[in-house]
Length: 108
Image 1: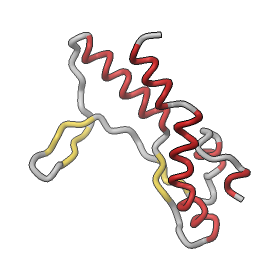
Image 2: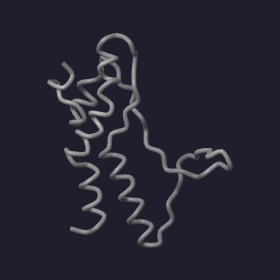
Image 3: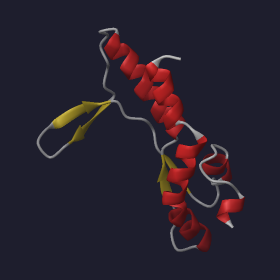
Image 4: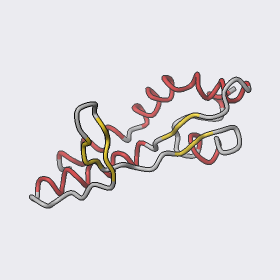
């Protein structure tokens, strides 16, 4: 397995999802309790895929095309941005549960 694949597998591992899921469980619990309306979700497998593809392009000397920019307080930095998903009580099962970020049991 190549180094990029090993790193991507670690980022997209069940252990990493569980670690991050614990960190974000409070937001999901707040949505379920009605104290919060939504949270932002960025599927880790999509972020990892994008990062890995960019790393391969960089290693090959290819140009990476930005699809947006982020202001870092000093300048506008060209960036590759992934879409975000607004998670609420209506799409929780199709997003964070389906992707394995949370289990149904952990949300009780």
